[in-house]
Amino acid sequence: MPAAVKVEREIPIRIGPTENLFLRGVFAPTSRELSAADLEVEGEIPRDLFGIYLRNGPNPIFQPRGRYHWFDGDGMVHAIEFRDGKATYRNRWIATEGFLAEQRAGHSIWPGLMDKPDPSAPRGAGSDGWLKDTANTDLVFHNGHALALWYQCGLPYKIDARTLDTLGIENFHGALRRTVSAHAKVDPLTGELLFFDYATTPPFLTYNVVSKSGELIHHLAVDVPGPRLPHDMAFTQRFSILMDLPLFWDPALLTRGIHKVTYFPELPSRFAIVPRHGTAGELRWFEASPCYIYHVVNAWEQGDEIVMDACRVIDPEPKSTRGEGELARMKAFLRLEAELYRWRFNLATGAVKEEKLDDQRVEWPTIHRGRMGQRSRYAYTSLVPHFEGLVKYDLERNTSRKYLFGPGITANECPFAPRVGARDEDDGYVVAFVADASLGDEGRVVIFSARDIEAGPIARVKIPQRVPVGFHAMWVPGEQLPA
Image: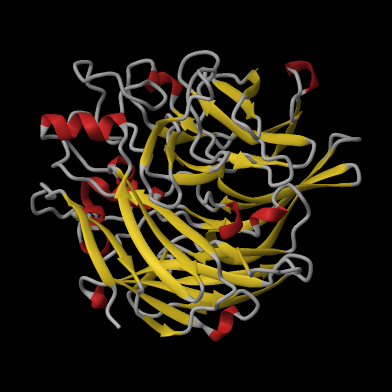
């Protein structure tokens, strides 16, 4: 049976012909906000799959002022809700202050990540406040709402997880001092929200804790030598782990207003371990070999050690491919080629051990979110550089299983969705939007049994419009959703 589709809003996309990969093909923005119930399915949706899968990503409207970077596009959330063996889809732009201002103006206002700052543009977001806060990067679920977050630290936008309506800026009852990093964390045991932010002026790095009910209860300035560019953090039941990694803006160029990301391999990687509500005097630095980390898998305490698994970038400042033009550097960084590594920080001796867990190149790791900050066994990652497959790791047995989507098909981050009544860590499903140019104006959501990734999808849900390739995703179990 065809889905019951309702067009909620349509905004024409005013972007001319372009050679920019991230504005055409499977990346091209969609112009409609839809609601669609009773979606068509190939296979069968399990009746014990109950909840909402939300995915964030860029969906620009206006012609860029300069060179478009993938993180410049207006945020749009795509969601699919599963209940009683049926699926409902909806998508909505995130109504950020920048989105609303450009709608009123009828054109782009701010420069992009690859452009020079414009002193005449209104104050925006990012490390220097000269970029548009698109809220297009990640999502977390905290205090009954989804929070949409942005790559270079921005204001968290509160989203109704079911309707996708933007409910405004979450400033934690007026206590938010600066901004929030793209990858905030929610402790499933305490409900606390943990995040950092960074800037080009002191303090260069801060760390914050928000209570389950939305009160900002801890703020700490972290002493680092200068402006830094951490992307993620980790936590255990007692500690938080922050990063000072040797990939950041060239300090000499930054004084001239030039933001050139540069790798300094002569510097170590440094990891700050601090009690969750700790002071500067309780913070300890651990040094490891130089590297860069975009995304952490998980961290936990084990005896005297803190164990952290993450995707370690192979080449933090990758070389551009000849013949790719002025966007070559951006494309090189966005390949996200990384390998799975483990770090062990010994709190008794101060020693650090590093080991590579696998040679496969993987990124966008997810786990059972109920295991975050605790010892976990399974991780689900995407094959890179083209997000062409799904890899499930058993980190206790040091084994992996994978599934390749097929020629021309890519998938976004693939969150784990526990089965209703599940008791084991991998008792559930893995869900993902996939992009396939051969589908034309249709999209797909695929559902895997988490215990048998290699068998391929057990169901393919038809989406009545194309879903552009995007960024991060999350799963919200149905019992956590408001009525």
